[in-house]
Image 1: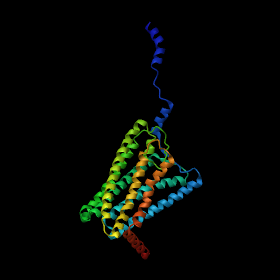
Image 2 (image 1 turned 45 degrees about the horizontal axis):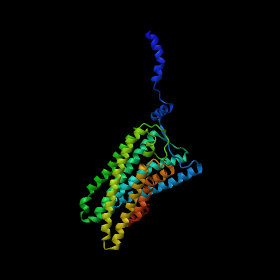
Image 3 (image 1 turned 60 degrees about the horizontal axis):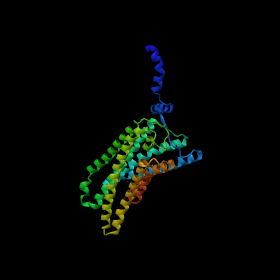
Image 4 (image 1 turned 120 degrees about the horizontal axis):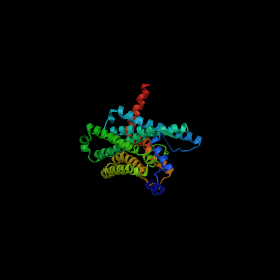
Length: 339
């Protein structure tokens, strides 16, 4: 009797408690999360002629950055008169600029030349790490450079005490360490997220916000919170830079000599312009709302914060600085005379 009753009830049990099944699309996403070996980057164009044009354009930009930053590094290292805190920080900035642009441009050039859009999983992780490392260290260094200019102009009598050689080395080391910790945090956290939405990135390099778009929605908030906290710290540094320059400009306007005012403005305004471009475009790229998802806009903004500063920095700091131009000319003529 019990067996007959069980047979009669069992079909209804299967209706009340249907077996748990995972949809096919979800199973595919879960498998993709653990089996991704490469990412597909955004192509600037599908036309072969325009791809080659992009290659030659980026090659010219890359060579200009290498030449400009290389000349600054060589000049500051070789000229004893430039062994001061301001030029020591400028040398570190040139090194970071070389690292920034070397992390992004060569891979994009190779993809255009060989007509491919692929970057390996490990290569993407390495690119994210070095981008975070160089950009984090550069922004920390720009903050230190604003403090250097503030002490030099507003407190010149205490300059040697506050910015001695040991203090400068410690500050520069702190900037590089900050970049390393920032990169390590974001890289480890980003690539620990499961990816549920494929492997196509709407950017010509591996950018953290684009990778987060591929992650599962409930995991996205973790790295998103870290990005917001990082943006808050960057904003605090930006406020510190702006306040420093407010004090600098107030002190400069009290200088009786017009030549002295011009010299002070010529060294401070370019620095403030580059910092503003770097932080505004960078924060927009990482914190823009999801409703603004135009790939072309994202590429333009990314170029402004990742490609333009490393190329423009040497021009600004060399063309607006007579002392550096004289030293550069001395180094170049000395090399030619030796030959």
